Image 1 (tube, rainbow, N blue to C red):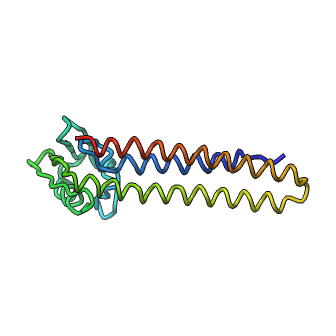
Image 2: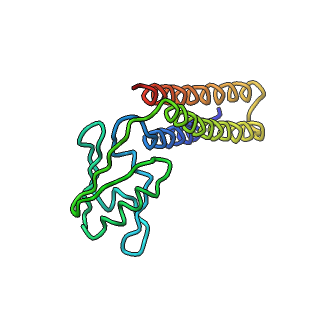
Image 3: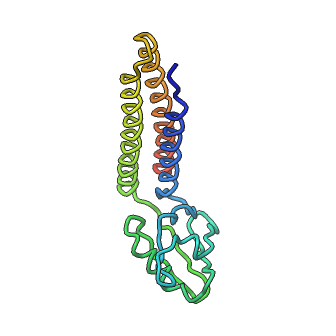
Length: 181
């Protein structure tokens, strides 16, 4: 019998990675995960923003960033401005950084959904790669009979479909969230 546990774990990892990518995609509301992809140069090295400051969403249109070390305020603000895909303009008062989240236009919302759909395609390609690797392993398994190989291929196809549907469902939710005014 062909074991699909490893393939399931790989596919779960792909879906988890996809969900994390979707958290970074900007919607119309402020959310601390929007800035999770930002790297800040502090103390001579690049560090994730959440390791250099505390990020909170005070309301739907404002993120407040409180640096652990106030000397890093300028570097943090510069890193957020440099994140062109977000289009954010932070302002600091010497102690905290306020990042207003501007309302999205309909055109910008569609562009964000289009960019997110590229991430969907990347995740689907990764799933197909896992499926193809499993199929190769099935074909080369000499101890399996033809019927067992057919069953194993069907199992791996069903598994791929299951995770494909999870990615589609996650993307559908995110698209609705982005397009909602």
